[in-house]
Amino acid sequence: MSCHELEGLIALHVEGDLRETERRRVESHLRTCLACQSLADELRESQTIFKSIRQDVADQSALSSVRTRVLVNIADMESRSLFERMFWGGFRQKATFAGIAALLVGGAALWFSLGRDIPSGPVEDTVVVVRVPMRETQVEQVDKEPAPSPPPKPVVRPPRRHRPRPVVVPSEPQPQVTIRLLTDDPNVIIYWLGDEKGD
Amino acid sequence: MELSASQLWMSTAREDVEATSKLIARAITGDRVAFEEIVLLHERRVLTLALRLLGTSEDAQDAAQEVFLRAFKYLRRFDTGKPLEPWLVSMTVNVCRGSGRKRSRNRLMFIQREDVHKVDPGNNPYMQLRAEEQKQVVHDALACLAEKERTALVLRDLEGFTTAEVAGILGSAEATVRSQISVARLKMRKAIARMKGGRDVLS
Image (cartoon, rainbow over all chains, first blue to last red; front, side, top):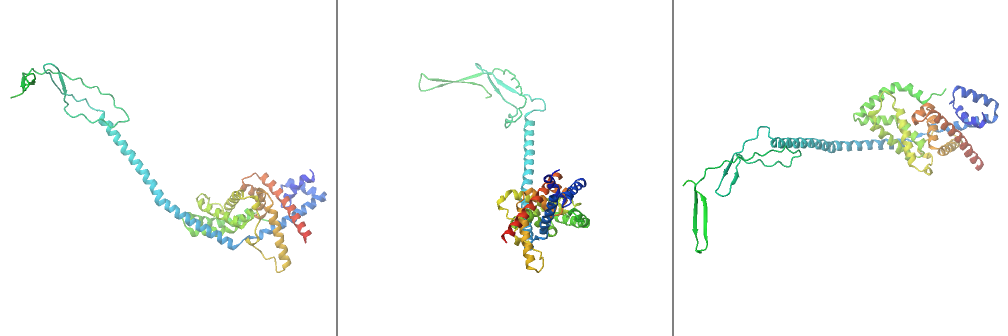
């Protein structure tokens, strides 16, 4: 190994940073090479000079300045985190609870609306009264109860209901009343055809 | 035989760990006085290391402040069974690396002499002047190193960590760190020799 290649190892050797095998090799080379001995001496001297700055430590005023700044910053951080806990933290918690409550209420409303729309029991019968006039058949459908208001656009469509066909019950023929109204104009005669009811 | 930083720590670690863990436990619960005690115990090492790595007092103070604020923030994650100082040193290195990347290399004017507490070398004015000159040479030479080389060298030769410990702090392979330290020492030798020679010629 050449002197140039050993330079790095000599730089480690002067501070005892070599392993045993490397140390032996460097020391045997140093015994025979004056140039490397000179390098080792220079390195020892420069290391001594370099290490002399170990005595220099930070100034007391600089230490006080750093300490003060650190403590002021920590106080600031703590007051900020307290503010966040009081306002932002509380707000976040409240918002979470409000969101959960809104979801529950919405879900309950949806469940009730769907539950009312889908009949669980048998469909109630509808009574239909049909009057049959002389010429045209008028069908009038009267429910026992008023029809429920349509659901407010449910997300899930209920199964389709089959409307019961109206049962046509022919009513008994009733005597017809004809009222003839005469006007001033002899060409205009008004006829009023009606059913007789009661008296 | 010189003791490594970890060996020195190990001797004081056991009694310190318990006291530190109590302080940490108090600091976590919001005891600001306890955290101030932690800062007082470690501020000198953190700021001095930052000063050695960054070069200027302003940057070093910013870095030290950031280290302690991070420590406060992540104190809950710290394993109280271990000594606190290596954790803070590792954090200091990381903060200094981050802040070093932000700065332009031209700005690196190594340690301003008024920012460090000078140890009196004696009453001899000549010796004082010589010691000051020598330190200035070292700081200038250190400023010429690449960031990784400077960090590895400072941790090994000034902070007293072993090569394996430096590798652990930097998150590098030990062989890489050895190479960086070796290159840095050779560069320092050249820089110190050149500067000394230049000054000798000038004088």
